[in-house]
Length: 234
Image (cartoon, rainbow, N blue to C red; front, side):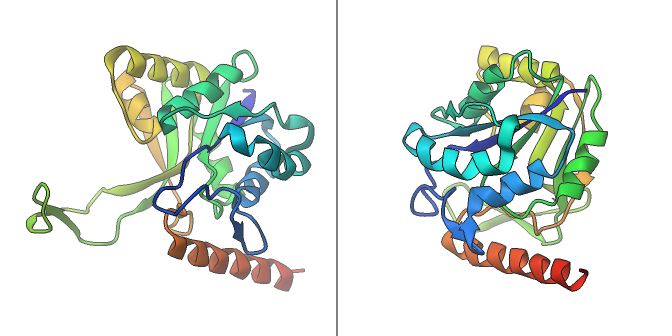
């Protein structure tokens, strides 16, 4: 299959305090780390990055040296993540048979985990990276911090990205969502609604999403630790 990588880097970063994809983490723009991990996977023939139009020049300067000739023109994001992904998928029409969709705010993804996810894909079968939930889960009452129930954590996973599917399945899932008014925070939910069989590929909590400023420090610690390990093995 011809693979494409679709990186979503268009969020406003309201919980972070502003556009975060270019914030420095461990000495580099956060987006650069995500792109590095994807670029290390040779099976990707093309990449598209979806971002805010006002960030085009800055994102181009980060992405072009990493992705080289595989880097397609930037795509403008939509009002929601789902619409941003749709815009990116339209740009990939005819260019790939399968797609991996990754959040640019997950800088600690590992290339080996990406490869594992890609191996799962076939028509009618999708996959995502995810980590087992280890905390006890509490559900609160609507509009309140009062606990309503304790939820079982067995067989519960925290969804991550990349999320993988054939291009045909991913397009069909987004088209169904548009027709029926389905809105979801990830693409696997849309594929589930289509009836695609979706599998978890175990990852770790290190593949965190940088959502709040404190997450930046944690991501930096993870990336610095990896760099030290790699240096010690040389």
